[in-house]
Each structure stands twice: as C-alpha cells, then as structure tokens.
Length: 391
Image (tube, rainbow, N blue to C red; front, side, top):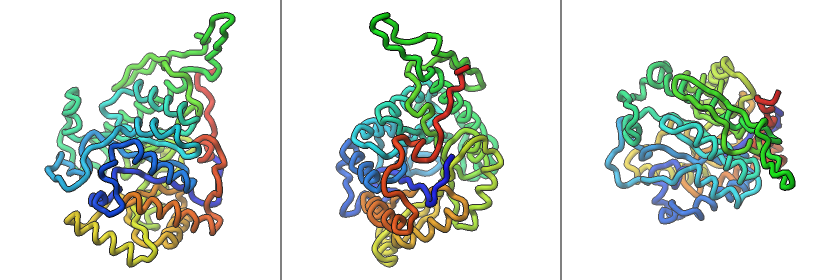
C-alpha cells in the first residue's frame, strides 16, 4: 500500500441525507429519491470533487428505526432502492470514482453477491467495491423465514460476544467465499479462439471447495475474474467483534472516533488483528455552511422539524469547510488514512464537500488535482492481488 501526503476522501450517500428531516429542505428532491437520475446526479457531483469513492447505504428494514423493530413514524424517508443495482446503473456514467454499495450478508448467499460485485467491477472498468454489513434484528430475519434471532439490544455490542460475535464470524466466512470465487477464474482463462472453437481453458477454472459452519460452496464462479482481481471490501466497525472482522477480512474499515484522542486507541486495537494492508477511514456526519453560525442554525432547524436533536454513531461536525479541513488534517496526522463523510442533507452538504472542502484541502497541498489511477484499488494505493489458485 503506497502512502500519500493528504487523506483519502469518500462520501456516504443515504436517501436525502443522514438527518431524518433532510428530505424537507428547500433544495431536497424527495420526489426523485427512487429515480436513477437522482443517484446519478449525486455520484457525478462526488466525481467532480475527485473523491476516492462513494458508498451507498442499504438495509433489510426501514431506516432509521429503533433496535427493537420498525416504528410507525410517517415523517421520515421510508423505502430504499437496492444499493448494488444503483451502483451498476450509475457506473457507465462515471469514469474515475469508486462505487462501493452496501450489501447485507447475514441472510444472503455469497455466490450471488460475488457475481454481482464482479459484474459491477466489469461495468465500471475496475472501480467496484462492497461494504459488508450484518443484520441481527428480528424484523430483518422475518423477511426470510429461515432463521430466528433473539432480541438484539445496543448494549449487547459492547463485548463483541454472543449474537454479534457470531454474525461477524459468519461474515468472515462469507468474505472468504467471495474472495475465493473472485479468484476461481485465472486471468487468462478466457481464450476466445474462434478458429479452434475454444472459448475458455477449463484447466484455469478452479473449484473453491469451501466448507464451513455457514456455507458449503464448490464453485467455480460463473463470472470471470474481475478487472481488479479482488474488488474492494469495506466494513464499518465500532467495537471488538467488527474490529476483528475488518482487520482480518477488509481492505477499508470505517471507524467512528468521537475525538482525536480516540484515534490512537482505536487504531491500536484494530492493528492487533490486521492480516494485510488496511485503510482506516474516520466517519463523520457533516453540516457545512459559509459560517459556523449558519451551519449550526441549519442543523437546529432540521432538529426542530425532526422533533429531536440529531445524534449518530459517528461524530457530528457542524461548521465551515475550512474548519472541517483543519479537523481532518489533524485526525489524519493522528493516524487515519482517510475519511468517509456523511452529508447531513443532500445535495447541500455534498456540494459543500466537493466545492468547499476539496478546494480548501487542495490549497493546502493535501488533495489531488486529478484521478491518478483508473481502478479503485489504484486510487487507494492497493496492489492488484495475485490469484491464489495459480500454481
């Protein structure tokens, strides 16, 4: 993994923004949330800012909602499009930015997801990734009817044992299956020789023969090896169980320090289990304006509409792009390799990132002036991995 002078930068796209009242802002587009153009416009704006990648949120239930199941509120955005399909639709319209949809792995099959992400890597020309997410809620399990989970409470996540630990153990096997399937075709397995009638060299397709507690997958994939060899795998981690999972299975981990003082402790814990090159991105929810007072007033207006002060698992930043640049550079110096910013309201806070924060970082020599690689792994300084099945 190569080093760079400034931090990597990504944005997390979710509906009308991360604040539950964002859809009611004057510049919001609630009538277009379920259209391709809405998502294309957001990703193209992020690409104009030369961001490393976007993540697209997804879930198996209404969000936001309490841990004990869906609520009956009708004043918040409800409903989603499939994140992987959004990314595939947007990919041909873009040329430089990485696309990292979220996929819930608890109730889905790794063979299907491996094919979908490999396809995304092909249609994007090597700019695909996936953010792996687990789902331990009872309401999500009832959508499938194959498993039953005990009631999950936030305090259960503290020690990383029990259900949460089991879900991340399962996710680790899931990612291992993904990676083996992506390698199950050698890079030159496709011959495409019209004269001899040979399209593929069968000797260069490999059974993966994975057998574990949750999955038994023979392989090979039905999709050739993706352009990146291994598309990017990302994960969000707050506590010990997801820390261990990310350190062993991911290329990028999204962390949630609440202050710069938290950064060294979190990094020390996740580095204990690190098995390969791992990017550490800090997550922040951002509300940005020309002045700190304007940003605070806008968040206060959104809070009033929502009927409660907005809080998040990640730190919440309210202020100017210049002040945010100060914080990001300080946290970068503390050890984080990048940041995933969650815009409080769309499109306002996204354009404040691309047209305010990015020029500010660039003026300090801390951000790119053009895309320096054609693949997402290349943008992040990650090598293209060798195929594990090549002798």
